Length: 232
Ligand SMILES: Nc1nc2c(ncn2[C@@H]2O[C@H](COP(=O)(O)OP(=O)(O)OP(=O)(O)O)[C@@H](O)[C@H]2O)c(=O)[nH]1
Ligand SMILES: [Mg+2]
Image (tube, rainbow, N blue to C red; front, side, top):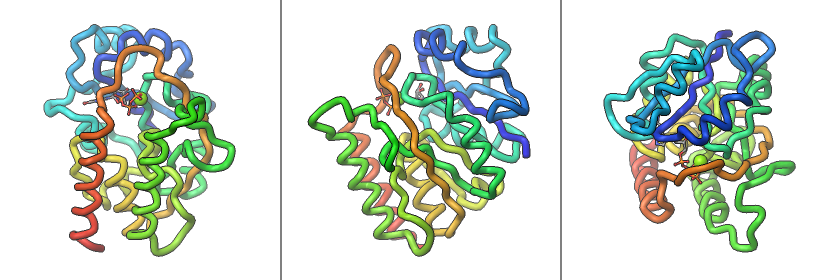
């Protein structure tokens, strides 16, 4: 099974400088056989930096994190894809875990920041607004769409892998930060084999988020309503 690491990036030069040295070369002993970056219009030199490290870059023609996923499915020939944000939130030590779950037959593998043994970036605070909101979205997705299989504890996390066959089947079309939620909901509807494992979410290494909490939350609610209306 050929697995490709897809590095999702928009203006992450400072983070890439810290993160790239931590990524193993593609090969049988790392979690992936090839790597590629998908860039959403960086203007800070991220693209040149990635290329100088031998990582091919796919440039998006449209804006949005969701579009980056769609570009991967469309343009990158692979049996499965691991999606990775190099901003420090996601732990490179997990790559081999994705390969393990994919080879065991999972269609979709999610690194969970919520299940037993996991660490969420907000766990260092008393008030964990983002985590609580995420858990509310988890509850709704499970209540409304789960018919079989285990409770999904982190339906939103971007750190995930999916097979090409599953991605084709789900017909995803979210262009923004709701892509992962749509993917999880549609995988639940289609009764795909979803595996989760606990991960340790780190703090952002540098720079700022592109996802503002309230507008993104409203988009999630709209997406949930749309998936509910579409039905099975
Ligand atoms: N290819 C691509 N990547 C994007 C786009 N928007 C955001 N990203 C990347 O997606 C990753 C996650 O985006 P963030 O803005 O960090 O969102 P977040 O992880 O919810 O927020 P933080 O708490 O700041 O980490 C980062 O690596 C971004 O560079 C886009 O339009 N295209
Ligand atoms: Mg992040």
